[in-house]
Image (cartoon, rainbow, N blue to C red; front, side, top):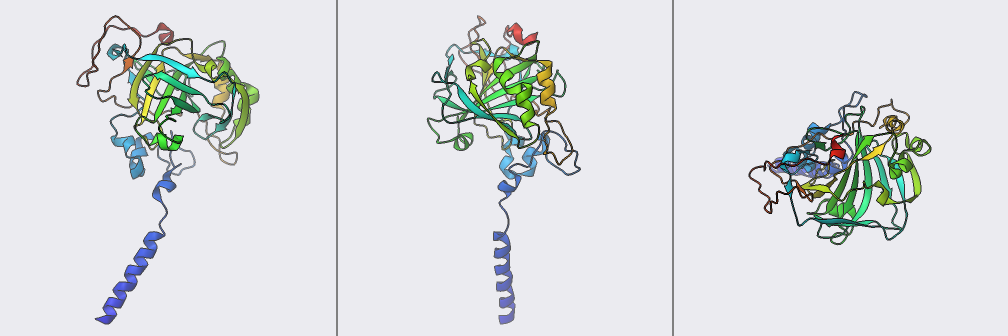
Length: 328
């Protein structure tokens, strides 16, 4: 009997040692996801698998307030209490580092001059953390949000965090009402938005051809990326990347900004891999539209059918036509 207990104790100790040596699964999976199938032959989870490969990402599969969504303009609710958006740059130009993250073109601002946004659906001021660009391999696709089922060539997402309640972006991203994302559709035209022109001109974009490439820009005016409209659409959702926390308020501007065909072509030549790996374009870095699940999509555009309550049981059939700039 003593021998049996000795074996059991040794086995138990070995089990504890093996268990403690296991890596943290959340850290292992942190960067292990993609928008499309990889060509290297190894499995990397695409959007339909994000919520299945890591328990910390389960909201990607079972969440009820996921983003992006298809905005049906006939179902929007006019909210007379939505205040105008207010952008505060302190009158300063800003600097920022452009990154090829392998998934996005990312612009992360330095901390010398801060940019804050308030108003709209926000109770608190939110600080701009990052600008991400999504774009397609063809001109008719590339935006994450859809408008009446229609995609645009691209989408700029300005991600802000609630700096009044949370100490940093990481904490805000996990917390209720922690983030605000301003989304601006991008369309192809003869001329370019001045902010995009700084990011996407040939001398700049070629500096971030491969994954982990970075290039610093200075003298940027964030107000330049906003289209000339005070109209917007808003709803409650999530970030469109794992772990899909449902902590984001989205604001979709009701007018696009423009980029040239050459700028779009330059973005499609960015690789989602480093130079030692076969080229795979970063384009089509888009999560498919998610179910709205009876969420309200509110707007500050008064279409003369005032509805003060936001019903969750069914969508209202409202006579409203979205800004024709978006439908051209």
